[in-house]
Amino acid sequence: MGAVITGAAEARYERHPPPERTTERLIVAAVLAALEDAGVPPGRVDGLGVASFTLAPDHAVDLAVKMGLKLSWLMEDTNGGASGLNMLQHAARAIEAGDAETIVLCAGDRFDTETLHRVSDSYNVFTRDHLAPLPLYGPNALFAFVTRRHAREHGLEREDYACIPLAQRRWAAANPGAVYRGPLTLADYLSAPVVAPPLRRFDCVPVVSGADAVVLTGGAPAGRRGAALLGLRTAINPDSQEGDGIATAFRELGPELFVTSGLRPEDVDCACVYDDYPVMALIQAADLGLVEDGDLRRFLHRRLLEERWPLNTSGGMLSAGQAGAAGGLHGLVEAVRQLRGQAGERQVAGAEVALVSGYGMVAYRHGACHNAALLSRVAG
Amino acid sequence: MTDLLVSSCRACGHASFPPRSLCPRCGSPDLRAKAATAGTVEEATLRAPLAPGSPPIPLISVRTDLGPVVIARLVGAEERDRVPAVEGARVSLSAKQGAPVARLGP
Image (tube, rainbow over all chains, first blue to last red; front, side):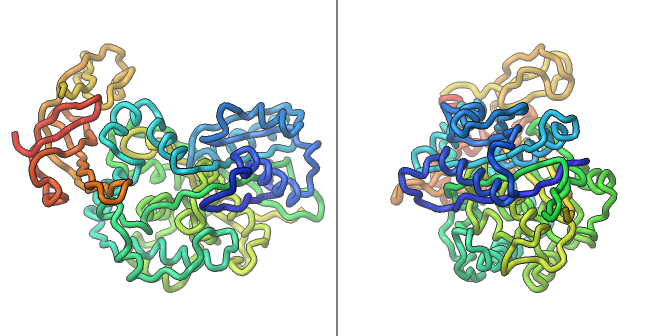
């Protein structure tokens, strides 16, 4: 693949944005920051991809109009946690095919309580008609079920799943963009308010407002570092929602991704997996080959907590916050920052290869969309 | 309360919930509605209320005898004390405004 990401940025995540920070303004702020990071003037952009739950009634084209972008390629993605890599998959092909030369991919949402409830209750027809009337109050209870199944199958306890939010909070302390940076102890985790047993507060991604954006071109300009896309695999609706949610498509997708990219899991220097819940981050890490010996408990306690292996170095969404559809780009932005040496105090020394995964759209019982990508550092 | 309707494939017999447009197993469009009346609890949880002071919502994942797994609200006496002790229990199923409702017992 020829596509290289040469810029990445985030519009500041926050819990309670002032009224003037609308979804549109958040996304535009992220786009401008990513373009500045890439050293590309807005006038050179000829491709735009947008994902948002709250941009309506505007669409991608309206954003182009409002930013004055003249485009030869446009897409709008509705796949939530998988939207970032889904857009990247299409954008990379558009660049290879010559449909566009400079593409910006962006995603963002502004949420207040009322908007959040409206979005989660009318997520799709299955949710509106069969889950919202229960009431369900969003997907937490569904992932309580997934976590119970996973814990039963692997003999894991709450102290084991705790390693993910605890390790990530330590990374978040070095990320000024993370909304939650204060220390988090095992006692805090275990005694946090109950959401839906076995899930408590720190198992559930905190909802924030914010936006992310990346800039993609056909190569890194001279003198600029970039992140080259080595491979990307997607699996949509692998089980028609009739599987158990813990044997995911990542199990097939992971090995395929490494083969097509010509790499092995041990080549990965840092990874950003989609952490809407600790169980899903763990499943992705394991199925994508990061748990060398298959020993989940050892991976959690030794590799992540003790050795601080760089998984979700932004703090992940569990500490940085989940800004709606921006969650689908959050891991990619962090991976690009690591590969370009821009991660500040949390920089992984010598990071050359990064793994990013996306997961999302809970169609009824668990996510229907899965994707993963490998990127490598390139010097322009 | 109404019947809990799943879509059942006339071609291969596979049942799905929520109802589908085509059978996910064989692709046939020839689906009919069938009532799922009973099942077994696979997982249970107690969703915290959004408004402080309101009671939590007992929710369960049920493997219906027809095959599909449904997410249901558990109703009936003392369910709050019995979550997740109800895992493995038999429940009878119906629906309220399209959402599955379960009661302990046959």
